Image (cartoon, rainbow, N blue to C red):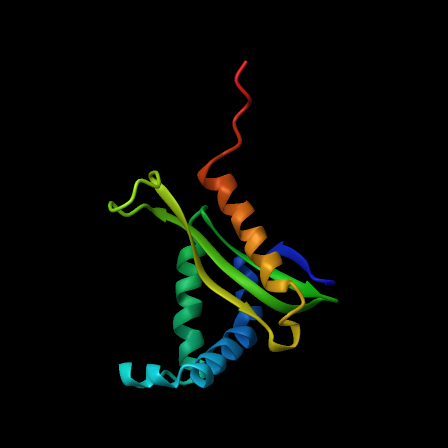
Length: 136
């Protein structure tokens, strides 16, 4: 796999639109039963809504968009954030949430998804459980 994982600045959020639209098309094709929940948004409106969510989430310190690039071309991304933990399980005060994971069809099977998940896990781990010095 030739992908490089890096953090995408909020100012570059519109670079994700093509992958978001690809994910929407994939969902519509792979899960037609979801139409029973109601009509889908058109791709432009879907991106408008998701873009606003991403920008809202990225306005806080504990959120990031990690992107996979291959030769400068985006081939995937993971939107992650830290939220207050729910009260049902004893997971601590905060938990990491993977809001979106998308890998371009052309990059599926290349390890890009796994690389994004690993990077997301590492990123969230540093926010939720900072590295502590070993006991003396």
